[in-house]
Structures are given as C-alpha cells and as structure tokens.
Amino acid sequence: MAAKKTNYTPYLIGAGALGLLAYLFKDDLKTIFKKSNVPNDEPLIIGPTIPEEIITPNGVTTVKSEISKGLNPIGTPKEKLNLDIELKPGMKGQEVAKLQQILNRIAKITGKPSISEDGIFGSGTSARLTSMFKTGSTNLFKAYIALFAISNAAAGKALKKWFDVYKTYLSSPELRNAARQQYFKNNPLI
Image (cartoon, rainbow, N blue to C red; front, top):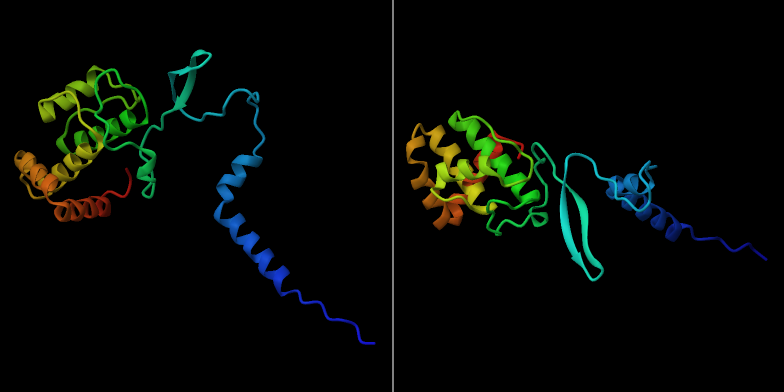
C-alpha cells in the first residue's frame, strides 16, 4: 500500500498570511510585547501630557492625555482629530496642540514669533487667532484652510490678500484640495 501524500499548500498559505499580518501590524506588536517599567494600573505615556478630568459613575477621575509636540508625519489619520469642534480659550487637548502647530507654521510664513505648542488654549493662542481672524476661536478645518491660503498668497507675493484666498477655498472644494496638495508638496510635514 502506497503512503498517502500530505498537501502542505494550506499550511504554507496560512504561514504566509500570518507573516503578512505580522509585517502589517509590526508597530502594534512591538507595543504589545515591549517591556514596561510603568506599573500595570498606569498607562504608558510618552511625551508631554495634560491632565483631564473624566466624570465616571464613581466620581471624577483625573487622567493624563498625551499631547504630541512638533509635527505629525503625512498620513496621520485625520479621523483621530476632531476637525469641526470649535476651539476656544480654556480648552485642552490634541486638537488645540494641532491648532498651535498650524499657527506656528503660519507664523513662520508671516515672520511672527512662534507660540507654545502645549495643547492648552491660552492667551498666546487666543491673541494669535484674534490677530488673524478677528475672533478668538476657530476649528482645525478653518485653520488648515487659512494655512493653505496664507502659504499660497505668500508664494504669489500677495500675502495681504490671503483672506480673499481663504474665502475662495472655503467655498470651493476643488481649489481647496489643489491648495492642500500644493502645500504638502512643498512642506511635507504637519
């Protein structure tokens, strides 16, 4: 009686699929298996933090939330930031830190001093917004459009007319997307 041959194809396909998944999620796997010196009840946070109060059924709990300083690489998913929330004085969080980063990019173009990127909407952030928009609040969507408008107006030597460009971008998604692509082509980080 002849020995039955074993078909190894399904095993090879499975091993290949596992290898592909491991490659795609290698950063997540490194995080999972990274040895931590932080006690198990305290989350590992890298970089500057801000305290946030969270109301729970057991009372108010203070947690630390990470704020990333500097610029995020292209490809950072926008769904992690709320682009539509109106950012006002006194607010804290990642959206405020991103707004401050955008305002510092604008300051670099316009020759103004930078402000702190601490994620706390204080007097410096408010003053910068008021000088630009005549209001002390905005959202990230409008801030990004202002950045694209100021960048393109400065490139065209018409920086004083940036607000006209801004209004055009607000009303025209096609022009706004073209301006966004042009900005990121010339400035690969934000």
